[in-house]
Length: 275
Image (cartoon, rainbow, N blue to C red; front, side, top):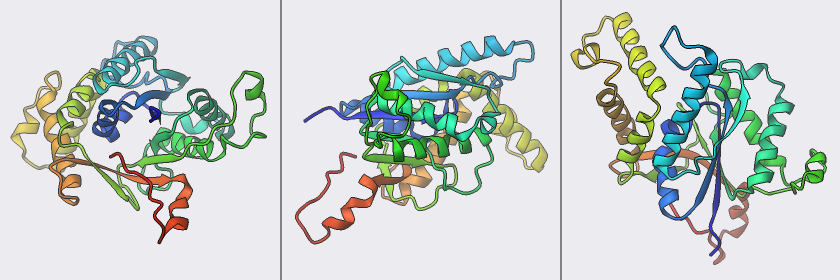
């Protein structure tokens, strides 16, 4: 069988690890080849007040490469270079073209990205890349979209499977058992030092504002972030896995071949499910 290709298109350096790290690691172990595209420079992703935006961007790029390596993703990540926190100011057609170009270059069988239809997403970068990547995958196989790509040797390409993730998922129809991969997911996240420190600090701000008393979190050292991150990720993954009978899980809204399976009901034609 031909090795399947996976493309992950996200806004930030840690999005893949947070939302799909266990699934990506599992796919890598199954022999899938996996590439990642990150839309922003992540230059605001630190608590260090004396860091320049250029220094922060380079630090986050290196963290992304280390996290990808832990999961088995090709460390040659493509960074689109947009400004962190302002991705929605980029014209949709421009960002969609960049995503379509990546799809035609890497020719994935499977796409992972943010879910444009999920509710309560409060980060504009996530919303922007969700629409751009979703539309790019829908139209990348039509030859009259961005005909200039063919002059560069990039042919139209159809993406058969799409896994959409969200912080508040809607219509999730696929839960992946990541019980054997939860530690890899946490290890990959912990390579994102800047973001993990920010995550602990943000949780502590929320705790203080709430007036609740959680000594474990209140006394946590953001520089020693792993215990907090591990507790957070395991609790989240356990709540997802529990619904499907797994110790730990990740859930997605999965679309396969745009619903063509409906035409096969009652026949012997069944699509395999590697996960």
